[in-house]
Image (cartoon, rainbow, N blue to C red; front, side):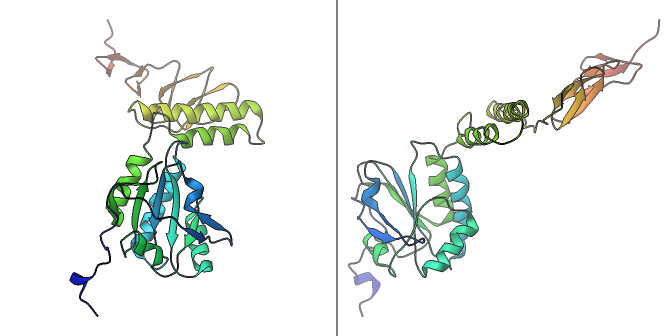
Amino acid sequence: MKPLSQSRIERNGLKPGSIAPDFTLPDIYGGSVALEQYRGQRILLVFSDPHCGPCNDVAQQLVRSYRRRRPDAANIIVVSRGEREENRRKAEEHGFEFPVVIQDRWKLSRKYGIFATPVAFLIGVDGRTIGEVAVGLAQIVSVFRKEFKRGPLDWSIVNEVSRVLSSPIPRREAFRIAGAVVAGALFSAIGLRRTAFAACATGYIACGAACCNETTERCCNAAANLCCSLSLVCCNGRCCAPTEVCLGGRCRQQIQP
């Protein structure tokens, strides 16, 4: 047995620009996945293990990142170890919507030059690794944030709107809810406080999560779900008292002549 210092096996991961070793591995549903299938596309290859605690944290971040994935972002492949059934249960528990393949012990890890989990490699359209291997939760999450960036309108918002419009609820109601979803996304995009908008019946207007009666009320503060009577003054997001007026952005007692 040689000491690690004399070992010729790479243990620090492939260097940036290295050709990503090809593989064809069984997936958790009885099929197989080959790296060759993804040639010409970006790939995020994540090495995991069902008994690895930090891998569970990575899995949660991975699912959230994938849900906001844009069409030009990297495809995700998880390479795990162990029994197929155990990995299938883990994948379903986390809600994975991307391939999970099983390597034989550390055979593929050895080709990629690192014997650890969780680790991740970003592979470019030319089949070469981009950047250093990401090791551990913090580094992998950093890769997620760069690769699956949030835009002014998150890709998941588009999916949500499509889901609402194709739902069996009445068409008018579906458009109302979809509009509320998009409005909430726009508030977030321009840096305003995110507000949940209610789906209101005819004759009412949405005011955050509240519904104001159009004939007797106005929306005074959507962030606080606050409706004001039409007989009252709305002042800087507050309903003034019947005897108050709005002066300098504050409700002040009206001075009688």
